[in-house]
Length: 464
Length: 111
View (tube, helix red, strand yellow):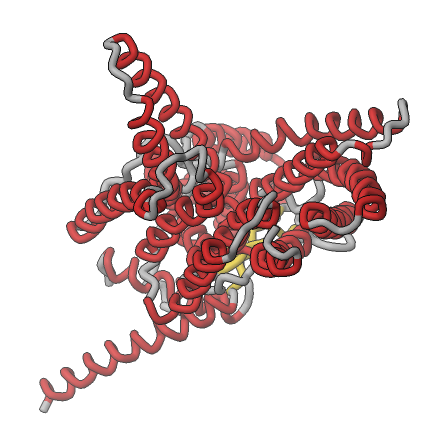
């Protein structure tokens, strides 16, 4: 019966729903998925009312009325929506105690920024004043200076207890001691390697602090994916603030030069390092304040660069095979290969964080693009690995080569696992969740390897 | 009886979680269920439910997936997570404390 009714005037209902939908769509907080959900709701509602004997027009009007005013729905959605961007970087506090906490947070963040800057001046107390002569001291501690204030911020922000975080803080301290207490002899390769790997360890520790207040725990893939997003957004903020800082420094130096006052030492010893290490807690604060401000940029960035990177990798492969170049002859080529591979992996990680697996339950053309990128990266990594093995057999195991070997093996394993995941996903044999879970657990291996390089490599290679 | 806005808001989360603990469901059915179990005493404005669901989802207390009905239309189903179960347990015990306290006062008054 109801079917007949629907048939006789179905055009009208469809038309009305479309109108109503376009009105909803014009609201900034309601995304396409929300729209489909609400439409489904209205249709359910209409069906039920028609079964009670109401006409199709009456049913539609009542169903829409029950859902509420479009503007009010929008407002409600705005409170939780991920699409609600821009409007309020500083969300007005709902209560007085919230307002107090917001103010306190701002003070804490600013204090941590100053703290980060001062932290980076500690080596001066030990007489390492000249940046050029003692660059290594600063380089090996840079990750600590950058991430420790962020850890403190997250620790406060998540209201973590000291007892629960004691182990993580202790680990932090142990690494700080290890990198500074280990002796280092010419040519300082193990120490430089340690400095390069410290950020991975600090990020892993930060991940613990970031995730341990989540109900599902810090090991859960979703929590970790959130952390990946946090870092990605934080990175963008850091770059933006850093650019601003560079302009500021340039202006300062330029102006004082005109006044014939030499402030080079001040800039080099205070302004630049304090500014640099102050950025990180500020960036973390901004990400926490407005988690969604950058999220809409992340998919755009990863989608712009995934195809471009794919072509770069193709060009690399072509450059290798067409005039058959022996890449292993050249050490710096290998380093560049590795940097590009890490970036390719980062892009994959990023598009993972950007993908809304709820919205896109099937593999899209973008996933295929990512798979293509991964396959190209595997070929490039295989080339690089061949080069490293040949160099190893020719020159023997040195710290740098062993580190490169380990990294490339881990990278290759990771890329292959990702490619398998994407292939299975494309053939509907696995879900996107599987890929995410695999990748998030794989982070352990990076942390483990970084620990080996920082702690064991200096011992194995006798601190050279 | 018209329930106050505050109480409606406070009870929405445990009610939704408890309904989803029975089985996964979608927005419209959840509202129907609430009307049914409360003899129409609790009636939420339909539009209010979805923001709450989305918030619970972002807090990882529930997850969602799309499923096509026989009619071919897609519905967004919500499913409770382990964290959601724990949360519900916690809220329920809190509620029973309040309930117990109110009962106690009721007894003292009628004495």
